[in-house]
Image (cartoon, rainbow, N blue to C red):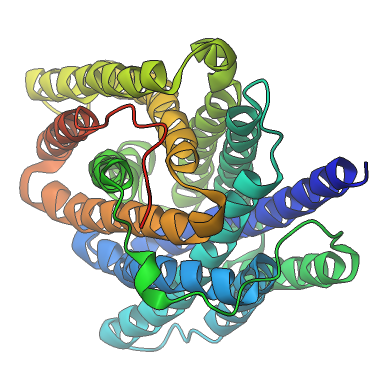
Length: 421
C-alpha cells in the first residue's frame, strides 16, 4: 500500500530537480549565444560553442545508462545537478580580454561539462518514469508527457530568464546567480529525496548499453533526424536572423533585441512543452494500441515536413528581411513547435514502451545518445548553413532531415512481446 505514494513522491522530486536544471540550461544557452554574438562572433564560431555540449551528450548517455544501472538513478541525478553548478561557476572566470580563440576553447570546455550534466539529469529523470509510472490507463504516456512537457516549458522560461539576466546584471553576475540557486536546490533534493528509485545492480555490464531491439534502434535513428531538423534553425540561424532584423547595433538596440529574441525562444519552447504535456489527450493514447501510436509517429513526422518546406519557399520568395517574412517566420515556427511536440512526445513514450524495466537506463541512455547526435549535427549545420546559404538553406536542410525522420519512423513495427538480449 505504500509503494504508490512513494513512487509518486519520487516522481515529484525527480521532476522538481529536472525543472531546476532545465531552467538554468535554457538560460545558459541564451546567455552564451547573445553575449558572444554581441562580442562579434560569427555564426560558425557561435555553433562551435555548443559543439562539445552535444558531443559530451553522446558519450554521457552511453555511459550514464550503465552507471545508473550499476549504481542507481539518484547518483546520476545528483551528479548532473552538481556538475552544472561547477560549470556555471567556471564560466564566471571567463576573461573578456582573452583572444577569441582562447574564449571559444574555454566556453566549449565549460559547455561540454554542462552537456554531461544535462544528460546525466535527463537520463535519470526519463528512466525514473518507466519505473515509477502506474501501468494502467495509459499512465506511462501521461507521466512521461507531463515530465517532458513541463521540462520544456521550464526551459523556455530559462531562455527568457537568460536574456533578462544578461540585460539586467551582465554576463558574470547572471551566471553566478544561477549557480547559487541551483546549488541550493541540489542540497534540498539530496536532503529530502523520498524512496522509490532503484539502487542499482552489481552485475550490470557495459556491453548491455547497445540495444539489440530493432525498434529501439530505428526509433533512435528517427530521433537523430528529428532533433537535427529542429536545431539546424533553432541554435544559430533564426536567433541571428532576428537579431539582424531587430537591433540597430547600439547598446540599447542590442538590449531590446536580446529581450525580444529571448521572449520568442521562450514562447516557442513553452508552447512546445505545453503541447507535449497534453499530447496523450490529443492522441487519445489511453484508448489506442502501441501499433496505432507507431503509425501516428509516422503521420505526424510527415505533417511536420510541410512546415519548413513552406517556410523555405516563403524565404526564397522574399527580397530580404521584410516585415511580412518575419511575421510569417514567427507564425510558421510556432506551428512547427506544436507539431514537433507531438512527434517528440510520441518518441518519448515509445522508447519507454519498447524497453523493459531491467534495462530501461541502458535503452534510454542509447536513445538520448541518438538525441544528442541529432542535436550535434543540427548545431554544426545551423552555423554552416546560415553562413553559406542564409535562411533558405537553413530551413531547406530542416525539411530534408524531417523527411528522413519520417522514413526511419516507417521502420518501426508493433512488437509488444519483442525479446531483449
